[in-house]
Every structure is written in structure tokens, then in C-alpha cells.
Image (cartoon, rainbow, N blue to C red; front, side):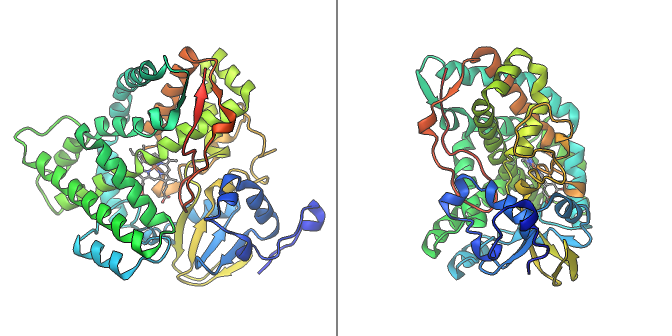
Length: 422
Ligand code: HEM
């Protein structure tokens, strides 16, 4: 299995089989996973993990190639939970008829059919119109905590803020905010976590409720006398009452997808950005002095400390990746975070550098046909957060000993709590 053991030339300790050493749910690994991936990239860049039944791919060039070839590497695997679900959980999901049609879990032609209307509604004009609202909301959040001595930025702001922005963008009622946050956590745990069977049942019920709420909302908007001037309204206009173009069930699937993809990820990006910038203090001071540096700083966070840590594909035919034969139907775990630290692509990858020239080449928002639709919105949100924090809280500091561990799963990585003072 070991491809090219260049440990001797690098002076690094050789692996004894990354498949047995990779412990994805181990808290110690999850607190600082990067040394493991550095070793893997150099000694066993593609390896099989028997417990997960996944081929793990770690190098930038291999991951990019896989993302660039959707005809050979299927996204349908994303319909499946990472870990096997219990019969009871499967039954609950089946009875709840949770079978959303989605972009991210489909290949062409279904992918194209669903992506096209999202592209139609997710236009730059709608995203740009959000900037003043996002800025006002950031200010409101700061006003709420600025009088305190210290705060946990995650619970105080980053947990809910991206969902509030998303709801505004989609035209989804704010009264459902805490429900959607809870459902999303349940969906995350069920699909990407490592839950014992008895806990899966509770989370599966949450997922069913999530799906039902998405359908209910779409029906309400479709039945309203006036089609609203927002994202959901645009999808209905695109559909023009014709199920063959896009059914209401399809729109529910789009909504169900966005209500998950559109905030958990941004919560983690905001947390990772503040945590990284304050750890590399001089970089924070630089952006406070010159906020034009913020956009590239965000890309550097996406490379260095990305919110989406892993992603997945399935090989549709047998294929050689990085010298390793992957059988037809092989499950692929793409370590997106490892790609950003690949020394073959990024010079001195362990250095966080907001001036890095090629940092925008990171794969943190994916690549190719499935490239993240929401990237402009996520970038806007985090840019405005950093601009407003730089203006109003330039003395922001981490309360070092109160950084709490990160929840382990096979999807996203970001601080669970982030205590700061100023
Ligand atoms: C920092 C925040 C975000 C990160 C790191 C992120 C990451 C990603 C990644 C890696 C993909 C590629 C999936 C693939 O290749 O299979 C993706 C796709 C997608 N993202 Fe995001 N995302 C973020 C924010 C958002 C937001 C705010 C939205 C919507 C409001 C969104 C909606 C989507 C959708 C709909 C897709 C599927 C595209 C397709 O399959 O054609 N994302 N995202």
C-alpha cells in the first residue's frame, strides 16, 4: 500500500500504515490534525482506511483532479451517512420520506437541472444587496456584547449570525432560526458524526422534522398571493408553475440543502478566521491598519484552516490515484484541509501569510461543476465581520486558556467556543 516512502529523504518518521494510525474521532488528533496529514502526504498520500471503508486522498493535485472529473467520480455518495446508520434510524428517515433532490448529492443530468435554477436566483445583485444589511447586523451584535469584559464569540455571534443572514437572503422566516440551528446540528451528527445507535434515533427524528419544515415553507410561499422578491420567489418564477422545469419538491430539496450548507460552514470560517488571525497577532494588526488586506486574509484562512475539512466522492470505475489502484465503486475521502498544506502546491505551507500570492488556488470551496454557490455570500459575511471588528475592536485578544476543543466529525472543523477580550 505504501507508494513511495520518501521518509529517508525528508528525515520524517515513516508511517506504519496510515490506515491504522488515522483516528478521525479521536479528540487529540482533532485538536491538531495537520502533522498527521503532513506525514501522510509525504509517506502514504493515498491510503485505505478499513474501519471507514474509504480510500483517503491527501494531496492537492489528486484532490483537484477528482473534483474536476464528475463523470468519473460521483457525488451521489453524499446522500449516504459517513458511518453506517442503525436499522431504526433508517426506518425513521424512510417513513419521513426524507429524499431531497439536491445539487451537492447529484451527478448530471440531475445536478444540472437543480444547479441551473439556483444559479438563476443566486445572482451577484442579490448577494451585493446584502452588504448593508450584513453590516448593520454585525454592528448590532457588537453593540450587544461590547460592554462585557469578555465573550465567547461563537455562542454570542458566530453560531447564529450566518443563519440570520441566510434567512434574510432566502426569505425564510426568522422565527425558525433556533429550530433550524438545532436540526442542522442533528443532521451534522447523523451524517458526519460517529453516534451510537440509540442517539441516532433522536437525530433522525430531527432530520425528518427539518425536511417537513422545508416542504411546508415552500408550499406556503407557493400558495401566497404575491410571489416575494427574494431567492425563494426567484425559484418560483423560474419554475413558472411547470413541474417538468422544477417541482415544488425540487425547491424543497434546494431549500433543505441551503439551510444546512449556508451557515454551519460560515460559522466555522468566522471562528477559524478570528482564531488564526489573533494567534498570528502581527497579521491581525496589519489588517486593522489596512482593511484592504482582508479579502486575501480570508482566502489564506480558507487554505490554512478551512471550515470544510473533508469531502467525498465515489469512483465510478477502477482508477489509479497517486499510484494506488482504487476499485470501481471505491469510496473516496478527500482531505480538503490537507490539500491546502501541500508543499508541492504552497510554499512554506505551515506559515500563515495573508500576503500569499497563490492562496486563492485553495480548494476550500471545492472546484469545478460543484464549486460552492454560496462562496460570495460567505466571503461577504466574513469580510464585513473582520472590517467591523478591525474598526471597533482592534485590541481583540484570545483568552488563551479558554479555547475549548472542537467537536469531531468527518466534515467540518472550527472552534466550539472562542473566548476573547478587547
Ligand atoms: C465558508 C463557508 C462555506 C464553505 C467552506 C463551503 C464549502 C463548499 C464546498 C467545499 C462545496 C463543494 C462540494 C462538492 O464539490 O461536492 C460547496 C458546495 C456548495 N455550497 Fe458551499 N460552502 C460555504 C458556504 C456556503 C453558503 C453560504 C451557501 C449558500 C448560501 C453554500 C451553498 C453551497 C451549495 C448549494 C453547494 C453545492 C453546489 C453544487 O453541488 O453544485 N455554501 N460548498
